[in-house]
Image (cartoon, rainbow, N blue to C red; front, side, top):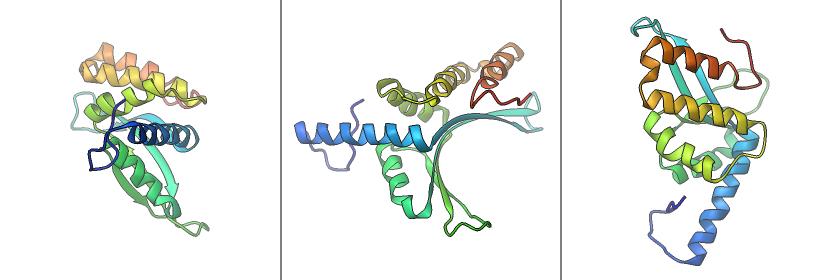
Length: 163
């Protein structure tokens, strides 16, 4: 994946090495702190009464907010949200989220195909990529496609029972 990290267009071996270093850092960071998920939420304005909601997320405490900004800058997409804590932790959590189907399809998925995950999250990613492809092809808008997607996501994230 050829991605210019900074706003300056710098070419050469040093810049290529820096891009590779950051790419592998993001890979490891995601293996440890990231998540590929597809939620199904109630939405009465949709044809089936439920909405399929894919997202790529990395969560960090407030002290590591700059790391999330670095990831956001690298991918040039997504948003960072604060998740205020009301427990005994001393800092809020922040979530870097990519929810746009086109960004997931054109930026996130190609990155993780080029730099494969090394943990159990690799399986979740492979299922996630299939779901995104089905949604890009608008198969979530018909019953057969929705059933296929629901079956796929039931196999994600340690095979939690959801449906």
